[in-house]
Image (cartoon, rainbow, N blue to C red; front, side, top):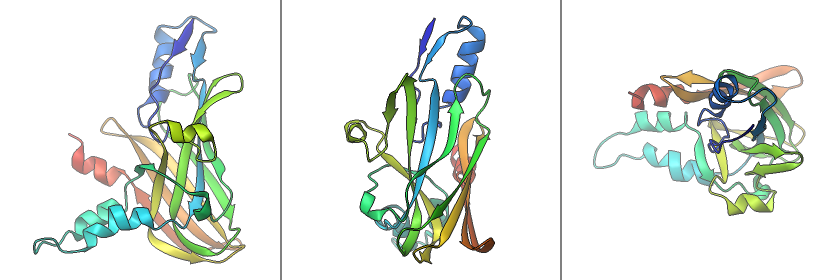
Length: 219
């Protein structure tokens, strides 16, 4: 048997690809079936890009028609923004994989990963750019990695995880992000915690979660 499913969201996971492949493998596929894709990984890089914040978040800080939208501004900081073009000039460090899931082996979207970055230049950390890589067969992959030419030829592009307060960081400093994934009201949810490090000591910690938006919007 060969199972092919394009249930890849902009992070690779939010269309419930983990549950879909687990269900298909258990109920429909013969033992030893080939799954395409067979694994999905998620990569992140700290970035200094401020354009996404100005376009999608700072907008809500301004009164509109005499109304205060400060609550929406706070919600906007707990969202992951899709179809964002991440430029290499905004990288503060080298990208790294934070999460990889072999499809068919995991039963649900409760997953987590952690990554630490040593900054190669100083700058304002606005958030983290991200993309997925799906292993299709052998060494053939489908990816939204901006460093790969094909990423400009698909609709996913990259995504952006904001920090609620930009951090002024210097070259050589380290920053860590813990990313977790689960389901809320049947929707795949993400939570993150970002730590500014000084040696082994955390000097500032910032967190966010899409659960707040899901609780508000999902019925």
